Image (cartoon, rainbow, N blue to C red):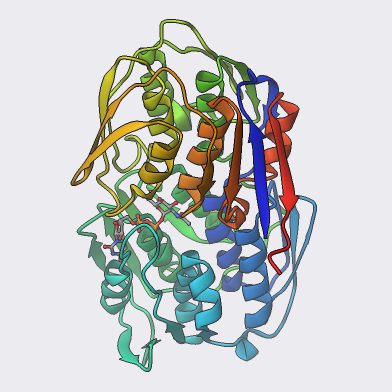
Length: 426
Ligand code: UD1
């Protein structure tokens, strides 16, 4: 069991290179099931979720290797021998495993997927995915904890009106519709930059997708897709914003390199309103603390609104604006306030009222032992520890390794007093 130990209070200063986006890399990796040709994908972050996805794809029958931040998908002629099963052990580890459904339905016409269980941030059903597959012509049976999906003839393009712009469902529909017969129209599609990145990859494979990045996506199905030379995954906007908030709470000054500033507009505009100094170039962002920081209320929403994946980190910043009150409303996930109890250990003054938290800013945090419940809650705890006086010990940090590429190394380089230690529980 690894833990992270932080002695807080250091101002973070320097440059940090943002890694490739986890939420882009995962669907892109699953898209490789749509062809037997080779391809190279660069700027893949080093994360346990990525390793899980690669192991899963190799289990299904692909030949995929990762060296540094480059993934090579080797050509294979084994589509017919692909396994059509997504076992409990894999789906339980990573919810994004459900993205095998679209491509396997398209190519094998069947897939048996273990039901994704509940997770730390709410029930997270998959009804939108399944309703869309039914509209495309799939039949679905639930048996022995597995969702058995199959297509008797072909997947057929149709109009799909999502009742909520689910990111995963939009991706799963794209991953199936590119090989369906005829035209698929996704209305009320998710607009996240990761959807556009996936669509760009699929178009490089020969798909015909237009409108990705808007709420209406049109896909003209193809008989076959092929490989491509190279695709570079977009930068991780959530990782980038986490470092900007780190600069704000440690009275620091950080330059983010290899970032797409427009993907962060909603957040950086909020931070500018808070009084943080922000200067953007084409692919960098400078974030510098000023003594005039003031709170901003936040309501999470779908892109381009404030991302739920930054709600916990934002809370840390609001907690440290002494004497000011603010609120945060979580509109995407139920039960995404598990970090509140942990932040209270540091001295935060927060009350939960349904889907809203009310925050009274305190003068300072004091270091505390804390436990990570989910990925972004973990980032918030690390931020709290960086701002707190004294020692913070963070356990269950495997959640962090799922989504932050070499987090403590990057923070250390910026001047944090942080280290990972191995505890033997035996
Ligand atoms: C993706 C991101 C995750 C982010 C989330 C919202 C990846 C790998 N993960 O997750 O980091 O927090 O978008 O921006 O990209 N829902 C249903 N039925 C469904 C699908 C979703 O009710 O069939 C609900 C979910 O329970 C949740 C909301 O819709 O309350 C948003 O889910 P969705 O947009 O699908 O998020 P994910 O794709 O799971």
